[in-house]
Length: 88
Image (cartoon, rainbow, N blue to C red; front, side, top):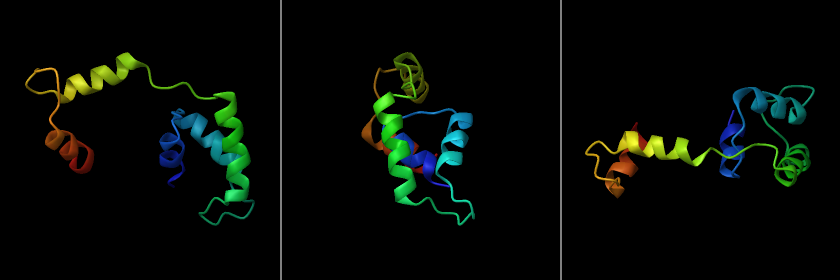
């Protein structure tokens, strides 16, 4: 269930459909709820080398931060960013 977080932490941002395809490549024949490293590494190495997933466009990221900038001052304070990332 954490595979999406792991993949995104590696700088890849697949769609939900692409994530399900990736899971299908690495899951065990008998579902255990775990992904074995031996299956994950070759698949993820190919994804990284082929640059299979496009990064999130800069304008989308900028709009996300603008939405969090309630006072429209051009920045988000560290405290607010921590609050957004941990609480909301």
